[in-house]
Amino acid sequence: MEKKSFETLLKDLEQVVKDLENKDIPLDEAVKKYQLGLELSKACYQMLEEAEKLVVKDIKDE
Image (cartoon, rainbow, N blue to C red; front, top):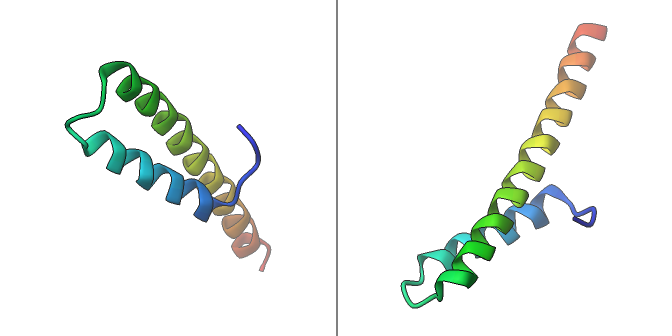
């Protein structure tokens, strides 16, 4: 997955969720979207964890 900002990843994830809420989506496309959603959510989570580590480190350094 290419390097994107947190905001872009979150926007992409929101679009995937909207697509999956569509009841007319074919099963194979839904599975692909679901897998993409998992990748996007994992990337968002990792970015949040990295940001948290930086904040905690800065607080401890003060």
